[in-house]
Amino acid sequence: MSDVVAPAANSKKKKGGGLKKIGLALVGVAVLAGGGAAAGIYASSTGLIGGGKSVAHEDPNQPKLVHKEEGAAGQPGKTSAYQTSYYEIEKSFTANLLDTDGFMQASIGVATNYDERVLENVKKHELPVRSAVLMTLSDQEADVVSTPQGKTQLLKALKVAINKVLVEKEGFGGISDVYFTSFVIQ
Image (cartoon, helix red, strand yellow):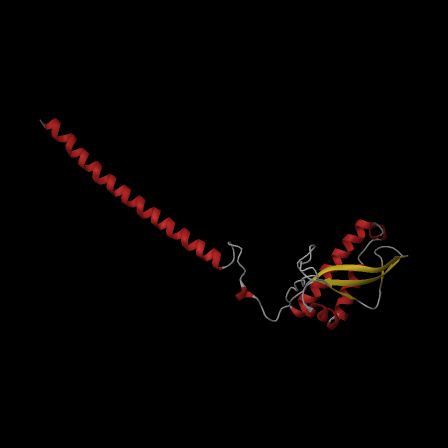
């Protein structure tokens, strides 16, 4: 008879242990679900997910993107949703080329999709902008900038140099493109 009692005692212990495991599993699932919900709420409120824009973080003193107005037919611009403004720096730039007796003379213009404050900043800080442009031009090799790819790379370098000056002086760059209005290498 002792053989019959022993299995019954073992089965009661298993049921009690099984309930504890189920209870712990439910608590674990609840903790994970709560943590996931909290993480989701945090991520959506900070704009990490959900595609929402966080308007509260915009600095009112910074330039704003300028949206294109609707055309005569009532259709927004198809190439970009933002208006582009241009400014040509009046005086040309002349700089010696790197490791040669040659020099480069170029005139440039800049473009921005931000409001008028960006171009006002370029005008306001024209002296350090000119210096940065001249430094960038004088760091060029004649055989590189005489190619179309070299000119494209130079335009990108000028954009970086100008934006760096604007960030240092005003806390915001905003120049989207730089263009040559004249370009001569001798």
